[in-house]
Amino acid sequence: MKKVAVLIVEDEALIRMETVQSVKDAGFTALEARDADEAIRILGIRLDILVVFVDIRMSGSMDGLALVHAIRDRWPPVHLILTSGLCVTDEGRMPEDARFIRKPYSTEQVTDALCDLFSYDPDCIGGVSRLYQSWRRISPQVASTTV
Image 1: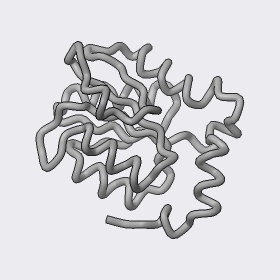
Image 2: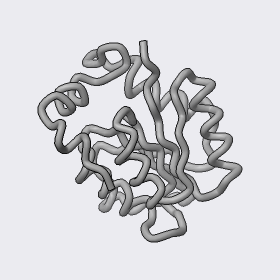
Image 3: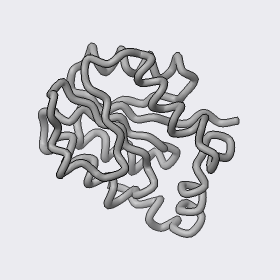
Image 4: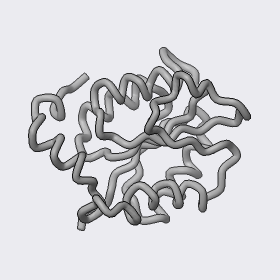
């Protein structure tokens, strides 16, 4: 069975490297981006990404909230996990179906969030949700959109 691909978007290199390692240790394929522009470029190339793990506060052309809305518009079935060290998030701007993990987070929190999305989902087939599979089947032109 092919591993689920997770894109970690974090501008702090050490945090990004630790999160990538946690995701790999949990048995997922981990990809990394240092900012929103790089994340969008990777998503346009790698059509196998099913989860994007995003820091809300990032430097660059857009912050994490703007990025997740861009992802939701272009790649609707991609699962979103957001993180921030802030106590209060701008929940009015967070996509309704996004998950949130507060920093500092543990390896177990990351693993649990990913496993909740796939391992324990009754609508999953081999780690890939039926929603994602059907979207890829009916919308190949959307799925192959590049940046």
